Length: 194
Image (spheres, rainbow, N blue to C red):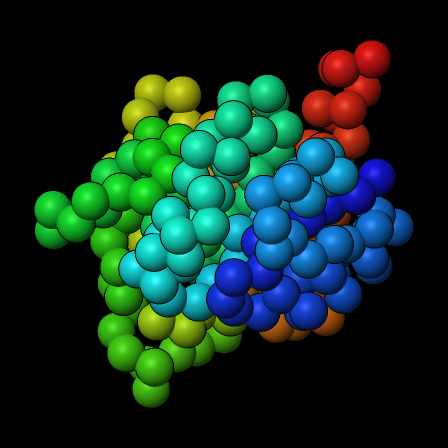
């Protein structure tokens, strides 16, 4: 099982390390053709506007929409969550517009207000270590979106079918269970294709 990490910006290597801890093979994705070689895709954190511009420049918008449209799982972390959202608060245009969520950028403040905490994630037995860095949050969800985690009554992890998002950086800890959750989604989607 191969899981790609969109390698335009962000913590690509750290995500690949976490993927490989699940037993899956991680692969950086730099060209749209490489999407044909993976069964799931992670869009990492970074700067959402920059990621969006690079995705447009290299043809990734339509390619990832098609990838997700085939039922292949996509996981957006931090800026990756913003990139997947249908709506961005403040009227900024969306990027992939795949997941029925409205997100607010930098909702937890600037870099110096970054923090770590343990969070209960629905479907994972023990609390998950979460690193929040200039993190967005989900302000609203559509009817098909399942909320997986709240932090101070704010939505920070959610799932809609084959799409998974979180506000934080799971790749910056030794806790790879959210990547395992995603790898299980990929495995389920592969089994459904057989």
